Amino acid sequence: MLHLSEREQVVEYGKRLILERLTNGTSGNLSIYDPQSDHMIISPSGIPYLETKVEDVVVMEARTAKVVEGSRKPSSEWALHIGFYLAEPSARAVLHTHSAYATTFSCLHEPLRAVHYGIAAAGVETIPVAEYATFGTPALSVNALKAIGRSKAVLLANHGLIGWDVSMPKVFSLIKEVEFMAELQYRALSIGKPIIIDSEEMARVIEKFKTYGQQPEV
Image (cartoon, rainbow, N blue to C red; front, side):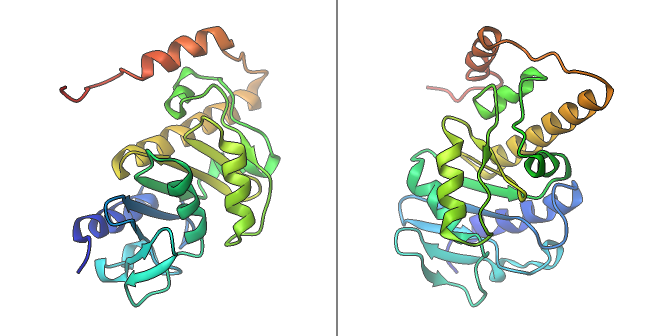
């Protein structure tokens, strides 16, 4: 079986999406990319996360979209994931959810702004909204990549949230943080008018985030 460790991560973090209320039912999808083999290891289509097994996970070749291993259909958003890996050389994991607060703002076509400095986790002061496109179509990938810019996350209009990072644990943490930012923005708006952190301060915060936490030894 190819990429057993990556398959196990896809299964594990798929379960965590449900257990941590970051998506519902079979919505959303997740993948890991191995640049040496050009293989994308992606969740299957339509199988509940809590029932997904390692043998259900699908291995695809990114540049040809050919299924290399697996008897299941890959996620309907496989093209969206491949688009991120081909466009962003640093991307090693992509995660798409229908989390409640982020999806709420996607339905309003409203970006997430610097209500709280934690938005710097995405590398930007504003998380944008991509134009709407039907799920599972090439247009969805095109629109997401057009909108995302320097951000590691983007809202998909009337759909949900997608993000990328250098590993599955990191992108999962990113998605959780973005959902929390969306919740804070929602709550602040429900009480009054949020005070947005200015661009100069956010530039400082974004720079500090680059060295936040434990750094790998050189």
